[in-house]
Length: 553
Image (cartoon, rainbow, N blue to C red; front, top):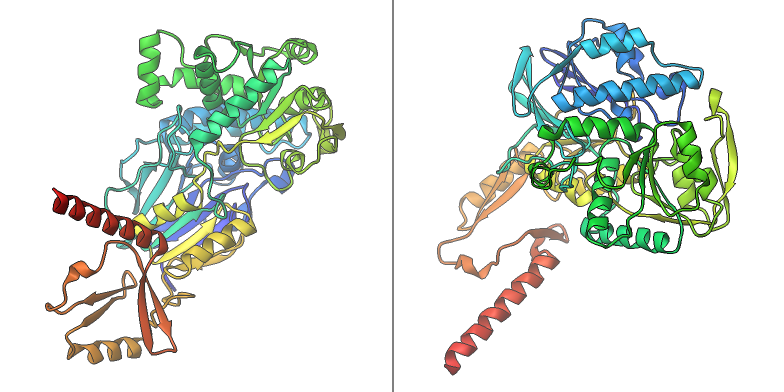
């Protein structure tokens, strides 16, 4: 049996309850222990019972979003001496997220853990800097910035001379509050990559254009006398939106109106203020030059209590509210939605991922004037309190995601040139679609929760043009040994390399990616990819034009 195995406890064929166990030669490493947003009690948890057969020697927390950290105290209840490694920012934010999780689950009548268990969990956190190799447990690991959230990390694991790269939640786009994911300068081969696939079926539109459209839509609503609700993830997204709104108001793109932060967004934004030295350098410099706080300045207001919230809900003044939760299944955002959705002059703008069963997803699928089920006024105590709300206001989605799209994920995977790829953290369509783009080059796995998968290239690549059977490869080597055209196959990278004879001018072939087509099982044709061919033709035309100009001169 291979000494490297992957076992998903949750967050494999879904987005939620992320928890992944790596069975390494020297011991087991657990990465994350999240909860399912919108679920309560045991239904919110990963399959942590599987850890009884595979106890972890250490644990890594990639970042502090609920779906990666919410079940952490349940793990520590079972393994009280377990060391949990994470970045400094993740450790600080986890305190707030777990505190809020305890509060919400207690209100629902099914708390996942106690205050004492939360305290003991926080004491087990071991902050480590990015790019620092940790080898205290036999195996080794290094955390790299993943771009998804302040403090978020990808993980490179080393065990028995082999390497596995776990992307975690990752983004290749910089925002005002977090830099893009770090990537090695050159291709760095590993044995396997375990990648998220949230947007594995999507090529997201230009973020710059989405921000412009987002600001324009807010401006139209405010100038029409309406109010704007932005249900938002409290971590990262709310702070980015606050920056966008502040900058737009300062430049005159938006009218100056109150920006209210409600729910968990309040405490998280205050924490971001305290973590300014960990934020992007550009934001630090802008704060230093302006001599103003990075977020809590201008018209930004923290909603202090229920009384103040009621005043905002009943006010007819134009305003913007950024409130948790981002999927409308809990927190303060459903309260604003219930009050504002029935009025056509208002707007609700979705800016992040929506789970398939979330009220936010169903609201996006509604026709104007339809009804959406939202948590009732009592916050859904007991988990069953929902009520229909008519939606006549403007509802629109803007892609300000903190996840890489399919192109970004494929680019990251290519940088590590893995033999095997495991796709997690995605719905069925997203994982299947992305797998289709990988199958010709990689051994791809789409495991379900509880399925033990070896992290070893099987050599059976669906759709691959190269038959990797040893006899076939040897025959190919012998057949071409006596010819002037040398064909070599690299079993490590699954690449075919063709060495042309010296008499053939290599400049006949332009730079770019080529595909190999096998015709009638014997004849083969090499073809330049379409976009590279267009670029090559443009380059050829430019050369001809330049030659014509020289001839005329």
